[in-house]
Length: 115
Length: 495
Image (cartoon, rainbow over all chains, first blue to last red; front, side, top):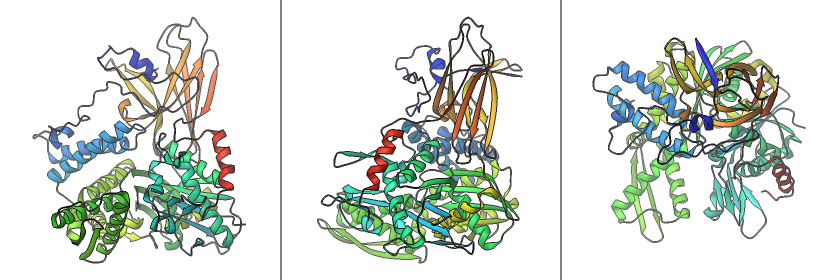
């Protein structure tokens, strides 16, 4: 069913079309080494970018039509993702994760009741 | 010589315990007569001495005092500059461990081998740095063990419980939630979930903001203008937090030399309101742990509290409401991790632990059913796999005449590459003039100390490469630096 083709991050990035400010490719390494400042691939992540003008619901991708159970399930997925990202080796990812976690908790308290 | 020794290298407090001949663990006090040593280091400007513990925490220049270095163990670039010299988190942790070792050796004899506890959510780098710190302090690490696992071992030993136990470990810097199963004298960890920067010191900072707000309203000036004043105010906030666990209301008088004094009034309700979001985050971590173990609240037989911040009444009521049963305290919540680590040193063969994170590589995954192709984090060892373990996944090369195969090593369970860490890369040269689609086997091994090794094998040529991960950064010592600084530390005066 699945075919898995090995790809390094630098190879994947080099295949993407050029953008005005492309992320730096990972340094070429002859041996295993850490990559603390990880370049960010252009991955689809609808709820990943928090901006000041967005409400917590918009940041979390919560729509007015969603039921409480759907909101709960969506928040669980987001919490798992961003709680893990809060321990990322990349400082930018960590900072983004903290903003997301704040939005997740705000939405939960508003729609599912506070503890 | 002390045979079974456990050390809790905590964010705010550290402790050492050993196993007595009767099989029960006990805390060994430091040379200052304290059962727990504040994890604080002071670099004196006049004498060549490093103060560790209460003396470092309670006095001296805050610019030369290092608090909570454990929070930076996973940051490869973090260094502390003192008198023009860079100190890595490992070195500063080594000073704390050296103080524990030297002081406690006077009571229990030589300490050469230890079990050290780490938060369940510590990543590969932070674990490596902890082992390096112990080596610099002159101790061999028999095993690293997750803090909630150690606490659970102690709880099971003292209470004789059986069944499924959820350990809620809210310490000074992190929250860990672990679910385990106790059957006879066997312990099986089912899952461990952690939240970084969710602990008592976060509550202290929120209270400090409340102090500052009240002070500004009364005096029309900030509560603190420099680090020394901020530290004093933070200590006052921490004291107030502890009182609010026992009282409904506290009053305090606080101030500074320039703007005078002000009276601060705080109620428990106000404090609980301040930390509400943190409490919600902690409950979401509990729910995540239950989901990971595919369990419901009713499947948990015992809820066990560990860590100083579980003294906060709101934490207990939140857990009681969620589980419908009263959580139990793990004896002394500040000491049980060190005590459990000493027990673990002897009982480790009877404790089955799991992999704390998923490890994998990046791959274009083609789904034949949907005809979709996507760059994904392809997991080789899933989180919560019993350890030690070794797993292999087959991949294919993507291009004709590919001369070098590059394999990124990822840490994290998300399938989206944006939300995992690339913690290393293996490059393997292969023969020329081969078509794409050649098979490559990637094997990851995860040992009992939660360290990762990776092996890449090109199936056609038989060429392979195996490596343990190594990290680079200003805050990470090379093996040579580690040896050099170890000998330097041996000669250092640490009080």
